[in-house]
Structures are given as structure tokens and as C-alpha cells.
Length: 477
Image (cartoon, rainbow, N blue to C red; front, side, top):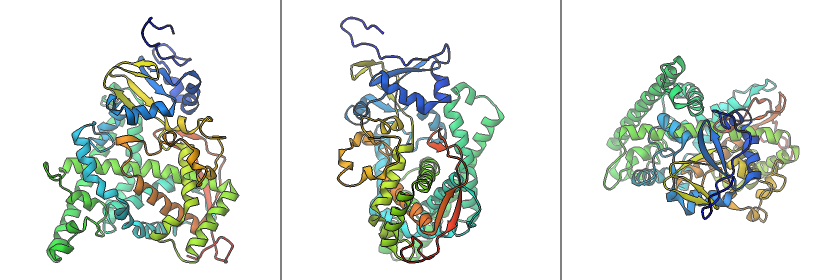
């Protein structure tokens, strides 16, 4: 496209747009292939979603400008964020930039500190061991569903404590998958469709309302528990004075946190933050774990090395919280899984003013899109990017990878606050599962399916127990 003399040239437009639909069909039918193809057309490429233009950044150095060095010009927003905000409210993931976001982040930061997260490690390990003990050897299972269920139930134990009533825990588990499917639908469909009084829209709104009521019930449960503990214990020993490290879970920190000027979070704000946290626990963690188990099953040398590492650290005993820092290769397997499969494949920002990105003018109010999947599959940055190779993250090799190209947790001031917890939960679940079970594929190779995360379209695996014989990768229960 020819530019106006004296002005920056307009962004190249991706080929294949259709009248009225723009590039919508390509995004719907072959999103990952389409995103990868944009790299050929420039560092900033214009696409159309219906009649609305969006600017896709294909160069991680330019994405770093959007997220870090010129962050004031790119607000958290865009079509996906706007749709998610209907569900999340003003949780940390969707709240607008500014003082309110900074206040929430500071209040929540202690909840996800390394030392605080460590207090939940052994509780999570115990939960995962109990949950996976019910598996039947030789009977194929839906591994994607298993890992989502396990990620959610483990997170509930860490967040709300081990004394959450079974009925409440079960209802959370039943609601969240259905709500996530409804939320994904809301992000894909035009806004006017999601506002129609359709049965699917009404059912989604009813589920979200029930989730908020359930969180309210959990808040009351925790507050009653805290008040009881404070009455029974000396002041210096009550949970509020210990930073919320009681068996009540990480959520205690939010209930007892107070901003110097505005005080504690309101009930609505607590609901919004709890929903944001729960949603992250369902999709991103479960998807990563499912893909990691699949990749290990089809790479025997990688699986063998993971088991050697686990056996060397744990011997015949179960995993402990203090073991997590001694599993660098397992961590590399998880990091390579996140590189290969997302977890998020498309993220949006909104230009707050006219800006020029790598020589391309972007108007105020335009959606600016970046894709962790696109950056993390760039052959200029990752040798043989379609190969699953945890070795690329080992010391001495990882230093050659541009850190701005790995965006599983975002970057800049909106970087995921729960990164430390996410690593702990991923390591706990994967290590505990593979310490006891070996899983073999029971269906054809899964295809990556881009929804919110890059999930497997199907993944059935057959568990077999590891019986202990020293040196044979089979620790005892």
C-alpha cells in the first residue's frame, strides 16, 4: 500500500480478507497457521475482524515496546479483554491501567510471594496424591479433562484451604468448566449477539451469578473461621498477624489485606479477584499439564530423564515442597511445553494515542494484538521451533534466547502476578503424577486447538502404576 509523502507508510494488510468478514474465517478455521503466516508480511501487520482493523505485532522486540518501554501508549483492553471483563469484572487481569490496578496488585502481591506460596506446597502434594490414587490401571482416561479438574481442585485447596466444605468444592468444580466454555463463546461472537436474550446467554449469566454467590459463601466461611481463630489465639499468633499463612489458604491474605488509604477490598472486588484466579487455574495450568504428559509419553528419552531426576531427589518417599527447587529438568519440560503450546495464543491492547510502531502508524483506539504462540514459534529465535526440546532451557543454552520472546506470563507491569504460584502448582502436579503413574497415549495424536489457550482437541491416555524397584524409575507410594 502506498503511503502519503512525508508520513510513515501504512501497515501491510494480510492477504485473504473477505467482504464483511475480513480475516474472521481464517482466525476461526486456522488461527495458529494464520498467525504464523503474518510474520512474512512485516513486524506490524493489519488484519480485519469483520470491518474492524487490528494491528498484529510479529516481532518480539516491538511487542516489548507495547508491554514495557512504551506501555503508557497501550492500555489493557481490546475485544478479548472487553468480553472477559463482563465475566471477570474488575479483577487484576482485566481492570484498567491506573491507580486502581496498582492498588489491587500491591494488595495481592504478598499472597503470591515465594515464601507464602511455599506454605501451600505440601497441602497441594497431599491433595494430588489422594486424587490420583483413584485412577484405575489400564483404563484410558481423558487426560485433558483430568488435568483441568486436578488443576482446579488443587488450586481450590491452595486458595481456600483444606477445610472448604465438600459441597462447595464440588460445585466450584462443576461450574468452572461450563463457565469457561460460555466465556470463550462470548469472546468469539459479536457483542450484539451476546446481549440477546438467547437461552445460551441466559444460562451463562445464571452460572456466573451462581459462581459469585458461591464465592460469597466462601468469603463468609473464611471470615467466620478467621474470627474464631482470632478469639482463640493470642494476638501475635492470629492469622492476620501471621500474614495469612494459616490452613485457611492464600485467600486469607486478601481478606486481611488493607490499603493505607482505601482500606480492605470490597465484597465485589473480592469476588472479581477470586473469579480471575479460578479461571487461570482451570485453563492455563490444566492445558500445560496435559501437553507435558503427552510430550513425555512420545519422547521416551525425556521421560526417562525426568524419572531419573525425580528418583534421585525423592528416592522411595513421596514428593515434598522442599524438593521443587531440585527438579530443574522437570521445570525445563514445563517451560518447553509452555513455549510450544502457549498457554495464551492471542492477547490484545488498545492504543491510547496515535503511535508509530516500527515505522507503522497505529491510530488512537485501535486494537494492537500480540501472540505468544507466534513469537515462541519463530525460527529466527528458536532452532527447530516445532521440535519439543527441553534442553534449550538448560543453563548455558537458555541465555542465548531473547527473554522478550517467551511470553507465557506476559511482561511489564501487567505481567502475571501468580507466576511463582503457577510454577509451584505445575511442578507439584506433574511430579506427583509421574512419580506414581506412567501414561501412554490411547488415541491418535492430538491437534492443537486455539480457543483461549492452545488445547489438545482430544487426549486419552492409559495410566499404569510404577512398582518400585530401585533404579527402574518406580518409587513406592
